[in-house]
Image 1 (tube, rainbow, N blue to C red):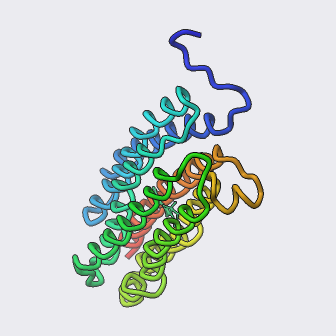
Image 2: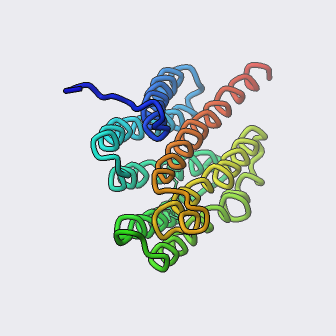
Image 3: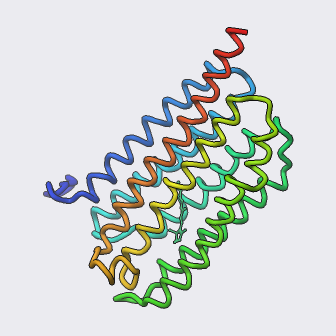
Length: 246
Ligand SMILES: *C/C=C(C)/C=C/C=C(C)/C=C/C1=C(C)CCCC1(C)C
């Protein structure tokens, strides 16, 4: 049908692209509006939450069209999106722990690790030869995982965890712990998607096709980007309530 985008009824990937787009847009509107309602010190965090989902919404707008037109993974758009949004998620960690004494150096280390994780992941995916190459996907996936492990370590045992421990605000402690869980469980969905590309372990071992790359990425993005924002929102709201009750 000329000019109309038709979603095949059995195309789960297309469904998640459209749902992802709308969910990101709705979440952005929610965070931008609610920003006006929270205490001053949380306004920047809520703005960042809204920016993360908004940047994703714009990329989903293009990615869903790319996917509908070609049936292929919009790898470049995906990684452009992540290169902007993952560092912003690092900013959320920094803003939460700033009151407990986080230095700008911590933010830079997290950003550097995430850029490393994404550049190596991009090389793994974008330069995977036609038909797949097990060595290529393993080597770049492994290098990327080092960046992921660094962030994971920082959130659970390193600087972020120690600062949260030092913080005398129980709401911040709880918030950082929630975000750390997202990094451990929610972010772990991405390498699963990566391994579905030709030459990837799940593709080779179980025959999971490359369409699952986008399926996992779309599900993970919705969980992580909206989830991160909601955790931050929850912190902002419950620390308001605490003050009102004090
Ligand atoms: C909003 C987007 C987010 C939170 C994206 C996170 C992406 C990752 C944690 C990606 C990790 C990867 C590995 C750990 C190894 C394989 C390559 C990647 C880039 C998929």
